[in-house]
Amino acid sequence: MVFPLTGAPDRLMRRLALGVVAGLLTVTASPAFAISVAAYAVTGILNSFFFASTLAARTEYAPSTARSQVFIWVAALKITSASAGTALAGSLTGVTVRLPLVVGLLAISAAVAAATVETRFAKAREKRA
Image 1 (cartoon, rainbow, N blue to C red):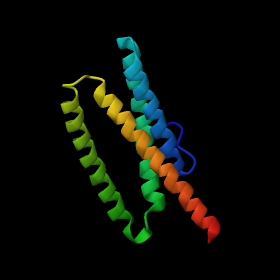
Image 2: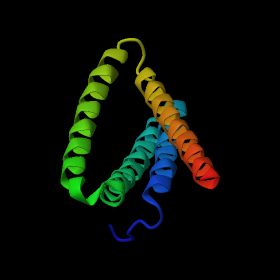
Image 3: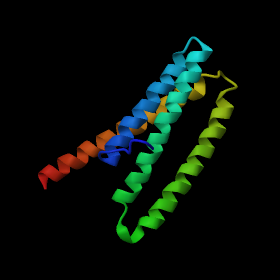
Image 4: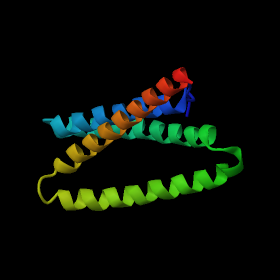
């Protein structure tokens, strides 16, 4: 990457995930093939930054004694999730080609919302302690 990511990985992950949601929303609402292709390209670029931020999060937040295990387990989980998502997307295209995009952007949005709520609860607990 020409410009390395800066900032807290957990915040970067949420922001970049919302960028991916915006890209998928653009693809879903796109009236023209050329716009869809461009939106997919931008979404792919944002997803690569998101991936880099997940690597940074694994490095920063994993306990030093278990860092390699955390790295491998999270990688395995991501591969499994991607395979399951691909299978689901393939089955949903029989209904309509936009349905996998809508399901994906809703799932990502829900994950970002859950992560944001968890972060706020953690900060509130820290203030009380």
